[in-house]
Length: 385
Image (spheres, rainbow, N blue to C red):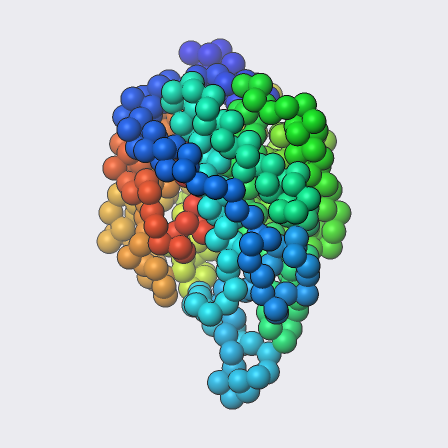
């Protein structure tokens, strides 16, 4: 069994569609929902950030723009710089680019999942139309940088923490890897799309904003590694996949996790429950993406105590019964969590834990609340299994 597990993990790391035992069970248990989402995605026409603009953006038509969620007009100075209300989302901020990126992610993930469940390449051919609109069409493509993300009126035109907005490319690149394996991307398009992600990967790893985000001590640092790992796998950059493996082992796990499996920096926030789930989901996704025959990140232990088994075990009872949560309630969106959290299905597969699988199966697999969608970049785990 151990030999089979190593083959499976190696297959995931290099893009071979190895079948996890949980993948077959997941398809059996959720195929109707997978195909329903794929059917919805087949009806969607490509749409990118160029369809929306904001006069507060310092960038151009092809530059992604968003505004910091927790920044509000100052009542004492309505025309002055915004002030912060941590954990409280300003509903008047510009979020159209983020919304259309989430839509893109949902479409690509659903189409790839439809293919995995049915082996019908029609779904992948439809996904190609969306990918070309975002990455190759000169009239609709997005620039491969994030200079103007999470801006704050009167303070900054963009920030490094805005890089977290592109976690929604995670299922996009996983879909692209499946599409490449299936042979549905014409060579010229594949070269162009890979060049886009190569350029974005370079920006993420060299620009001051990217370096700031890499060095963030909390979920932002986790999500930087998660994104760089996913993009590096697609562009076949061993340098950066190795870097992410090392950073998980030497920085993320030892610096962020407590001996009991919790994340103290997330517990200090005004939304400790949601942020704890978010960070655990991101770390689990890193382990799912990067574990191979040489690096079993799921079982790697830092400081003799800290590992993903403990992280999953810490949060599991609070997902099963949120009323047992012993910390402060989130200031917003307390009632909307949890949903079908990715850490449950990935941990179920890694540790062969049926309790985790059953809890994931019973969760909400199609949340519609924008805050939840924003913080769940993995909605179709079958494409990672």
